[in-house]
Amino acid sequence: IPRKGYLQTDSDLHSEIEQGEYYYKNSTDELTVALPRNLLNGFCGIQPLIEVGQKLKEANKFPDEDDYMPALDVVLRHACKAKWREIAHLMTFDDLDLKKDGVLDRYEIKMMMRQLLGYEPSDFAVDDMINAIDDNKTGTINSGEFSYILATMERKKKW
Image 1 (cartoon, rainbow, N blue to C red):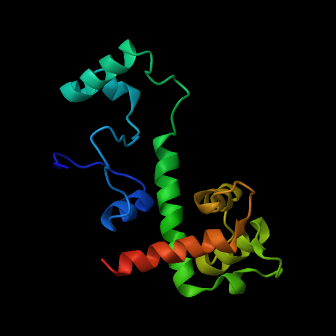
Image 2 (cartoon, helix red, strand yellow):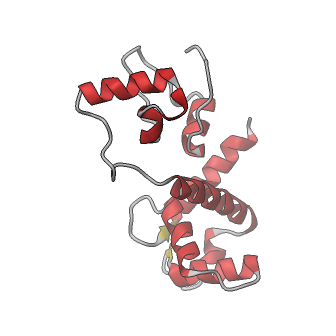
């Protein structure tokens, strides 16, 4: 695949691409990316993006106003995943599972953050940490979700 530019993606996708786990099987494969609607509408005059926007409009696939993830959410999720990687380097799942019930709940995550930060984290910061790796959307982190963070750390070490 010719590389003509750079795209900031989630580190999980980046890892998959770098490790050869994600590849284009044929020319019809698609990679979904987030683009601000204003760029597709012509802001900054980036012609290729304007053309994509026009094609999306013609196909009635142009994103609706509420069909996006705010940029701040993307930045927070990336930062929280990076923090989880640091935590996984310092502590095991069993160290964090204070209640020994097989999941990390809000209380346990808040205690861990308090220990690492040295102050009481805000509720939204705790929620962001949970949402960053809570794949099954239970509001808790299970050992599989935590182990996935460890696995991504190991893959990055091999680079």
